[in-house]
Length: 240
Image 1: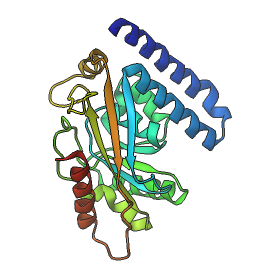
Image 2 (image 1 turned 60 degrees about the vertical axis):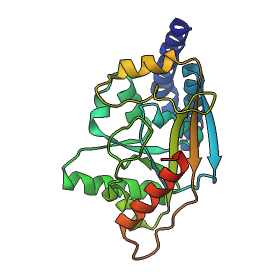
Image 3 (image 1 turned 90 degrees about the vertical axis):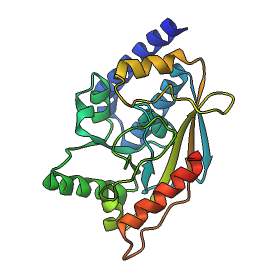
Image 4 (image 1 turned 120 degrees about the vertical axis):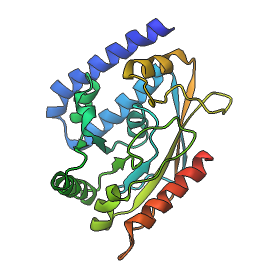
């Protein structure tokens, strides 16, 4: 089973790279989003992950705020609703996945640079104004999924400044019996290869996305209280 999954995964990544290089330049933006969603859903099937989407509908033009567990989180969210992502700059150097991310509207943030942060905020606001969803992981790192770290409020500033809603997404990975699984966790000293091997070794997993109602960014709202509200919603929905 593992060898078969690795083969299918390799072929699927190559197919995705070919689509990005040859098909994307010829497609309308809406077609690209559809292709991205279809490819992400297929990736989850190959990895043995069943998508379970619960809660409110995902609103267009909202900043999606999620807890962060694994590299596969990006594709789980894209399978639910194709989105642009804000990611740490290091992801850009990951083999193939970094290239795929860069060609799929990922915004790479260099930490510690205020000037770069202003540019990123403007890019995010423009996407939200265009009705696109932008997803962020405000914990700034990954966990094993059993708890939620502090949310960095600065990442929510573009939504506040442009008046767009923030919508919390609670991500969790479960075994078929509903118990928590840490197989997809990309935390601690695990390498990307080890994390992928853990996912492939699991016979079947459920990728659960619980969507809360959008939190409106009313005039004068404080981004810290907004981050606290979003974090509370995520903690509630994962049972932390």
